Image (cartoon, rainbow, N blue to C red; front, side, top):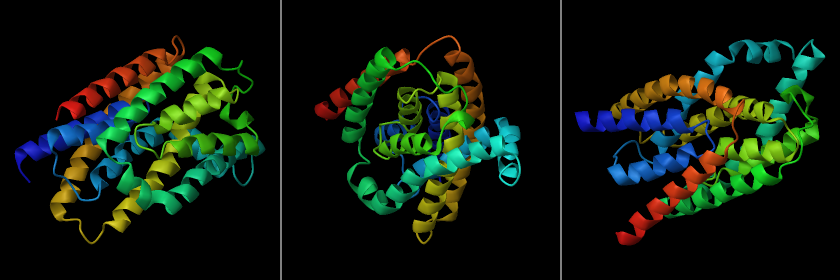
Length: 267
């Protein structure tokens, strides 16, 4: 493991922290950047999945109080129990579909061409949703019914296609269902914990026989960078959505996707 590879791992962790909770696809950015850098990390795209744990920890630290209240409220408090119920129900579609199609998706869709096109199409979708979204009917994640939570989970499952953006699909889908912008964003944060944790554990388990000590060292570097940057991004995003919509991110997606397509066609 040379110094260049370490710096590349840190850069990829920084990009993960910057993009995980923005509607611009962290996985898509990592796939594109790995391709551009020629990064030689752990096999099977494990690095790109595993460093998401850093972003998960940022959510756990920042929202520990609310998540802990939801966990202990499962037994007693009805209102707190709704948060835990809604997170679990929204997690189910991605869990089931991920187990069924994990290999197919990674084998066929984890490439720069797919990411470039989904970045562009996702950007157009955000522009359309921002213009035609209904008036909010739900101000808190706890206000959602079980059925609505499953619908949000189905939106998240679409993001198994790299470049779609897990946070983008969840937030935009929730807003289409009448969830307030801030509540939709927080739901995306909460839902990231079981979703990304499950994806990371599953990927590490599937590749356990081919991982070396240096691979875990690189993952640790990326994890640390993703955690630190993720903390800052989460705070900034919550402040942003109180004054702005997601239109700038839509234009960013279209520009990055188009630029990458141009680079790919010129190779």
